[in-house]
Length: 175
Image (cartoon, rainbow, N blue to C red):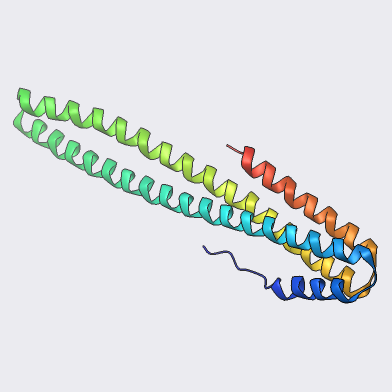
């Protein structure tokens, strides 16, 4: 799962050029805020990608553990059939059967742990991705502000940027 990137670099460049050629001092602040928002968007994007990769790896490891669990289950079932056919179980077969049961419990626990880690990482990915979206919207609105020379749009842009920061903090403290 790769995050699709919205090409906002040209908007940031346009805001910077507008700030340089405009007499309005607030446009320089718009340019500065879009640069900061772009950095925050990049950081959130990297963290989002990291967590989605971790989630996939954890899910693959969990699937591997469940396959191993099934293999042990098949071995135990075959051993049960052997014991049933023999009538009297020998000590070696019974100890193997007990070992398989114990190993299955450990494998199951590990698989469940990996699944929980995958869910946690995927949740963090989703929250970081929400932050990236908020930052991208903020950058686009800041560009509109500079293009239309309306400072009110810049305020809206800053609000979306603040929302993106909230997503960053929520993702950072999420378990």
